[in-house]
Image (tube, rainbow, N blue to C red):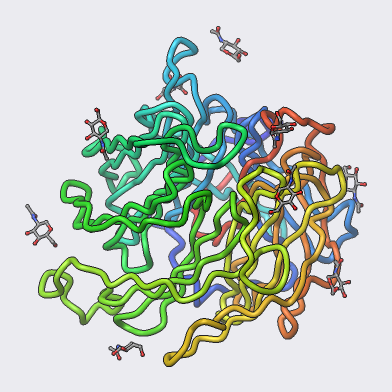
Length: 441
Ligand SMILES: *[C@@H]1O[C@H](CO)[C@@H](O)[C@H](O)[C@H]1NC(C)=O
Ligand SMILES: *[C@@H]1O[C@H](CO)[C@@H](O)[C@H](O)[C@H]1NC(C)=O
Ligand SMILES: *[C@@H]1O[C@H](CO)[C@@H](O)[C@H](O)[C@H]1NC(C)=O
Ligand SMILES: *[C@@H]1O[C@H](CO)[C@@H](O)[C@H](O)[C@H]1NC(C)=O
Ligand SMILES: *[C@@H]1O[C@H](CO)[C@@H](O)[C@H](O)[C@H]1NC(C)=O
Ligand SMILES: *[C@@H]1O[C@H](CO)[C@@H](O)[C@H](O)[C@H]1NC(C)=O
Ligand SMILES: *[C@@H]1O[C@H](CO)[C@@H](O)[C@H](O)[C@H]1NC(C)=O
Ligand SMILES: *[C@@H]1O[C@H](CO)[C@@H](O)[C@H](O)[C@H]1NC(C)=O
Ligand SMILES: *[C@@H]1O[C@H](CO)[C@@H](O)[C@H](O)[C@H]1NC(C)=O
């Protein structure tokens, strides 16, 4: 599947397609573009055409094999794509992961009506600074790249050039565990940073440490000024994994933390953030008031935590663009039955946020071990793409924007057979936001 390499691209860099997410408009006829980190192969570019049948709606357009050994995470910033590889960087002799940057190209044939073709071109690669690269993020200003290494217990911070080139690490944070946590199956015998995510203001970085039951909070003033300002200590056996955010007003953001060992979502308020451009981040002291408001189970109504016994492992968390529904993926490890996405309605309440999330129910992911899912970028958030790691299939679910539930499967593509090792299948999926350099073939 190296069809893209057959094209000769004349890059017209002046034809940068810009456009913010809120302006995202798509003619009904044009398919969506998605990227999948397929551990066994590389980064796949796919199209999703909702007008086609479940079996035909997803099509692999290109496969890029420059993303290192076991690519496991993807993030977009404008017309660049960033990925992380698990180990073997720069050679098989190394245990470290690698961080990679790519230029997205969309090549449009000059003849009218012809379908565009998409491709990725490697811009740079660099060591992730530790064993087990699992996550990367780009700050909102595009100047800073964060990387989490789950097995090496490190997070590295890199300057990003406008060209997408990743610079040498400006910080390498190393975390230690004073004593093991209660999590079974080796889940809490060392520090396991699972994510190093920037908040919507881009001024704070949250490192979720599954092994240590902690969130390390950093103030970020560009790639060369990253300072830890606090640590959130969670109950033993929590296993914090991934977060998402929702801006409430110019000084308050909600943070939703999915924890894989106790299978909960915790709702926090972050007060003192600078969400509007008018708020001067320097005048604003780099302090943050972080308050836990609610703990909700991902497995049913109420806030009951599971034991950290690896029976269920919550994975990803995401919110619909209207802010009305929150979704969390669940991985059940003792059955081959399809896994689920949990659906909550969202009710901000200034006086009392203890019922902020209301558990509505679950839908199937039509596959096993949904390591990651993401919601489509259209204003109505019509679809979710789910990467089922063990059954090695990508599923597109259609969303009822009023009830929050998924009404049906709109796409299902297989990348391989059942793989219980979890070393081959899709580990991440993201939707393109159509900001690509256009070239003509
Ligand atoms: C990193 O990129 C260079 C080209 O810039 C390439 O030669 C090398 O193989 C890449 N290394 C890895 C481990 O992907
Ligand atoms: C590196 O390791 C991978 C995976 O084990 C293997 O497929 C590849 O052949 C190895 N490359 C070299 C140069 O040994
Ligand atoms: C962890 O240990 C290393 C090496 O002993 C040390 O340099 C580092 O500061 C420690 N980190 C934390 C967060 O305690
Ligand atoms: C956890 O360990 C138990 C006992 O060794 C094993 O039976 C089970 O399969 C493990 N679970 C996972 C998710 O690895
Ligand atoms: C680092 O960031 C802090 C907080 O924004 C700021 O007060 C300080 O001046 C910055 N230091 C440098 C060297 O830029
Ligand atoms: C944002 O909302 C919080 C909670 O109601 C409030 O305390 C704060 O003053 C608000 N900020 C602004 C700028 O209105
Ligand atoms: C794990 O803990 C839950 C309670 O949180 C319990 O229902 C389940 O049976 C336990 N599983 C195993 C394999 O011990
Ligand atoms: C999702 O769950 C709802 C409520 O149980 C159900 O009506 C609907 O059919 C489910 N959707 C899918 C795609 O299974
Ligand atoms: C989805 O595709 C997989 C792989 O081809 C297949 O095994 C599975 O039955 C399909 N599921 C549905 C619900 O069509």
